[in-house]
Length: 173
Image 1 (spheres, rainbow, N blue to C red):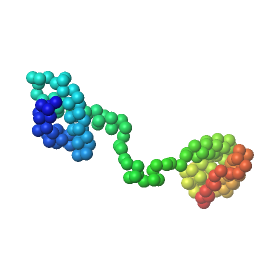
Image 2 (cartoon, helix red, strand yellow):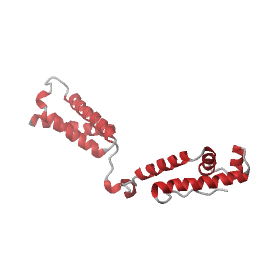
Image 3 (cartoon, rainbow, N blue to C red):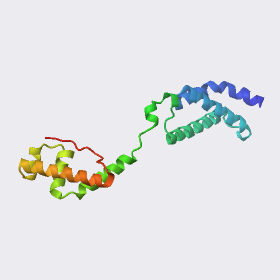
Image 4 (cartoon, rainbow, N blue to C red):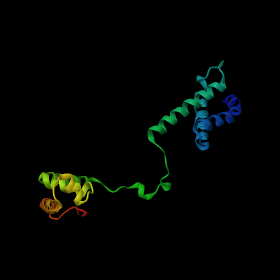
């Protein structure tokens, strides 16, 4: 093993340079060189005595680097927990929003077509009452009447399912 250390030691700076070039991180490259040397010494008996030691060490380093890059690509970027914004560590659960949305859409689908059309054009698309009247070909008073009835029916449908309305519909004039 003493001959291994004598042969390997002069190659360490070159291995480190190559490791930094591959990984673009000095600390990770030092770890890579350490692993390369460990593997080379533990498998010294597998080395060809007539082969080029430098090429063998660079091949080991290269293969270990490729494995690490593939592994990090699978795992994603590593960030220390102290460096992460606490707001990104936890997210508000969204199940209730999804259920509420499904219930609202079910209630909207239960409305008669003329009420549903006016409600969607005003509340979702943000059209004014006059624009809705022009789209549907009905007078302004009819739009206002249908919208009022649509909101009332929708509110009653939602209250029947919950006991209180879930959503406040915005008013646009």
